[in-house]
Image (cartoon, rainbow, N blue to C red):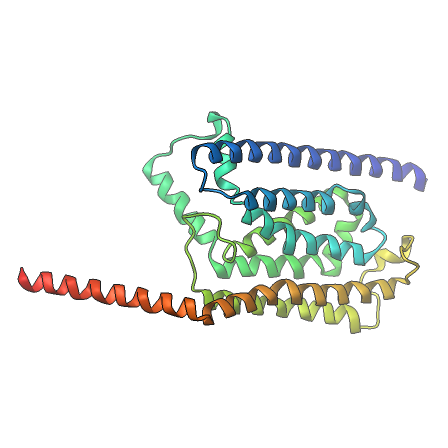
Length: 297
């Protein structure tokens, strides 16, 4: 009976992996064609490092969602945690660093690129500004991490391949939203003050620290699903849970605090301070010139 039930589940898993792999390969081909097209027309618009970042990001998405590693998360919470950390904290910022809007739109068929009325264009820009607001982006990342680790949602995702696929997709989308204020690849994006981005990253570590500390120190199994599955690495389910919590604790600390420290150092550097002073002088000179012209008039 168990064997008969496992066969359709395995078929669903492989069909989803094939669909994801095909979609990622198609995205990579469109991006590469667009990147080469842009490089021929505008050599300085998009650098080679962006091509590398986007490619590595797609490979990491495939590793977390469609590779053999994706199947092992049903046997180890540590692997499960590693998958979602890859999607949210590594793959997502790399994809954004690739500035995907330009190459992808450049090579899309004309059918998908239409002119919109001014009202629709204004509505689209307003919606983009709302979606890219740092508060909403922070909440999206936090909600994905906390929400999917609630026992009810976690158990549902582990027992259904379709729900599990939605879970993986939501982690990737939440990661893209979370990192969009930090890695701003769109020229239309509203830039937030850099000091607020350091605070943004620091505050993002707090919910993850609470969750990971709970998994490490609660001394009880939070997800009973792993009691009925063969364990990897010869770890008991509770030991695997503690390992997963420790992995999240350390990983998130480095993934969020290192960029926060880098942003802080950049703000405090002498060159940045000099640039701020020059910009302030330029603005003050502009106001003085405008005032003089108004007085003459």
